[in-house]
Image (tube, rainbow, N blue to C red; front, side):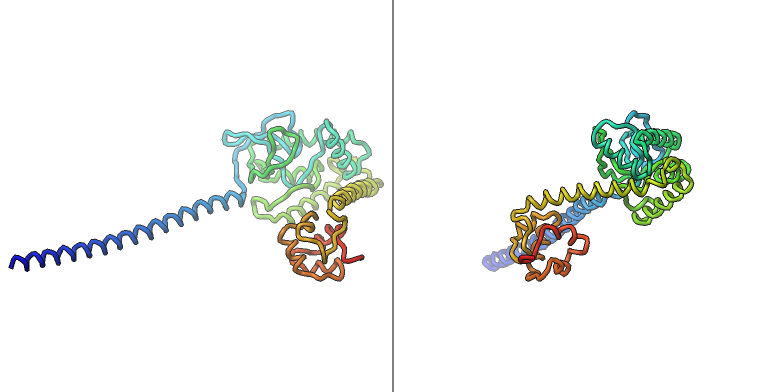
Length: 318
């Protein structure tokens, strides 16, 4: 009898241990699954935040105020919003310079003089200061800024960011500057805060520019219609000459001058500006080539890209 009780107790204990082990395994599996889900969600949130920051959506700042500063001009100025100050460079437009303190400034003034068909560089500086005064007046009331804080190159030691300025009356400052003949359609652009595409915004500004030209307002009031075509052609010619020099220098840096499309290595192809590892692999995979134009069959190479790299490649003794 005693042995039977001991045996039954032993059996009961064994069952309890087996049950406990099963419960332990079940709890461990649940915890493991919860931990995995938690880690997954954390990863999604972390990477979601990274992608969101790289998307660079426009941020809106209401009730912004212009800060008087000697470095301000028609398309770039210091402003304050939400207790922070930063320098904004307008999207889409370029106003005349207000001063010349370097060789690059002088080149810029020459370019603007030719674009507007003026015969005196001094008048560019004059209208640059007129544009600055115009902006001071327009932004005398609080305005709205939209920016993604994309860096804009400039002379300011503090740096600048591209942005849209909407006046107290609901107009884009860039449009007002072009409409009044104080700016040209030129520079970096992107989709506007109210959803207008970059290309459509460029067309709208060009229409305003034509209207200002016909009305002879702002800089257009002193534009020489008999010389504007000649001056612009001269500017294009000089820019073309400079581009050719750059192309020659780039070509000289190539390991063999012009590269044979059928024999060049992947590394040699990457010496050509615009060709990276992926495109170099595709070019090699597309061999053999009978002419340079055969590159159009390579994914990623269209007519524009082909013209940029044509000077650096050959096929055999072509």
